[in-house]
Image (cartoon, rainbow, N blue to C red; front, side, top):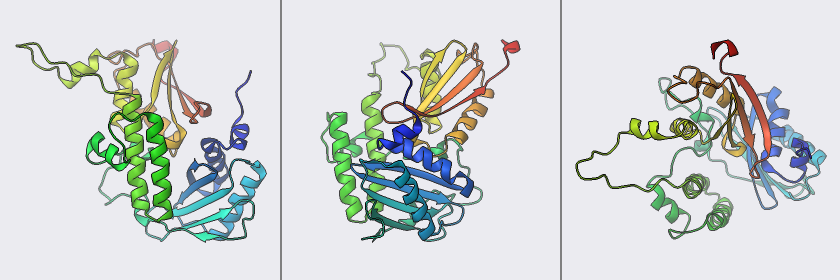
Length: 308
């Protein structure tokens, strides 16, 4: 049985699929789209070099959503920002059943736009594509505090508390707290789903292993996952014959094409044999929805077969 198409996934209310379709529609306009869903509310953030005009943009998005006929979604929150953050953005909330009635103006935090602090500042091109890549200040203990949880909470409890607190912050117009909650949520969820290995006390007379020694002790896929995580990209890595597959959640990567190109360039500069990847000829990149369905995929050659 074939997997559902991107359009079919969008019709069920899958936020990642809706965002992927919106990015296709807005690509010619130079607008990037991010988004998520909370219950029956779909939230979309539009970013471009120049601030999108409100009236035509809202009408365009509403027409697209109407064609999709997404039953589980009743409310749309739409935000627009200029990429350099110099212009004030705008935000509105409306009912998709009656988009011309009861349009609510939303507060937009201009500081949330991702910009360089100066022309000389270097920005990692892969990390710049990742939403909420920076850890919450204070480490894991602080994430529990921000999400009003006790250590030992389950992933389900983390998700429940996050969505409840985020809804409260949105109603209060506290965008800065929303971003803090989002960072804490992703950091804690990743920590619970991928717990660090238990530390072992070194034997008397033994010195602690260096970072390089610990990296070399990892299997090739885990070693590459660690290298990518250092660059701000949380990816699942596996090897299938001569193909290296890398997948990430679509909601965490704003521009998967750029991320794929940057990882491709990064790997071409590495010693593949030292990484245990000497047999790899092709890289396969995938963006996944929250239920692990593929919403975008691209293959890039790593090297020709003649160089095996």
